Image (cartoon, rainbow, N blue to C red; front, side, top):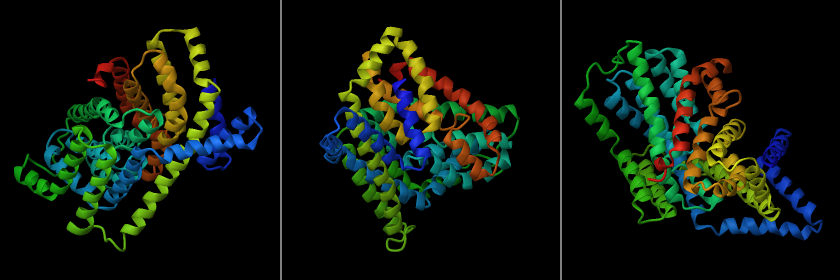
Length: 424
């Protein structure tokens, strides 16, 4: 009830036109003043915001954000798609598999599924619609837009680590296999769908061509090195996430601005910096206000009260996980992933720990739920973005996304009740 009330108040304030950081800040201010009417108590919020500024890991947030914006403005997505199509396009469902992998890669880099639908949808939708039925194509792009949220250098993972105060590198390791599972299941569905329709996805590649693959590899060599750099830095364990983010940004700027010259460093780069700074500033403002709000929750022992209430109902952690999944799917529908993390994690994490749930397993369950929530009717964000992008009624997107959601829900059950997948 506490969580529902908090989310309801914040959503109401946001619907009334307040920016999200002001909604959270206003709620936190009101709650602190209800405890102590002395305005000096509000220094606690400033103290928490100052603590945020001293977190070394926070450096990774603007650097990875800038990297994503630079790559979005470059021709990297087209090169990666060309390689994936050359490598898998000859298979039944090959173009769909290539599209899913491209979406996952692009979302991992940008940290925003909506951006993937808008940017990649313009390229992928005409190709898919030409080879498959419209419903299949729309569903694939709508749900595939959020697949990369579990892969490095995903911004939601970094934000989760900051809010939950757990090791971000270990979260990246925990989300790797679940992310591969979700991607592999949807790719298998695309393959079987094409086989069932007895269509041969060979309109561009009649046969597998080593020449085409080699040409695509040569064109994408700098992109492969970027992927290798990220994976080595994140999973190698010999550098911090902040250091990885700095090296990756320097590499991307050097390649895109001076080597390939796809982005003009004087005409385009300043605008890209402004766009990334706006997003980063918004996230940090929300996070700073949320930490002040979280301090009130801890001071008022709200998580302890929630624990007492739930343990009085059941001590079974599997029932708790089932209820948590249902709640997080709803949260993922009505809130963007950044807001959901900063608002819900401080309440849910202590409760989950009281049930003996590993914090890194919880991070995977949390993120997978929010990823699915993006495409869950009736108000999943991806549904409305896809409706606007592809100029189709939202009801059509509901039906198109249903088979993919069923598969993703099945994966969620596996991830929830098989913690070894995240804790290998």
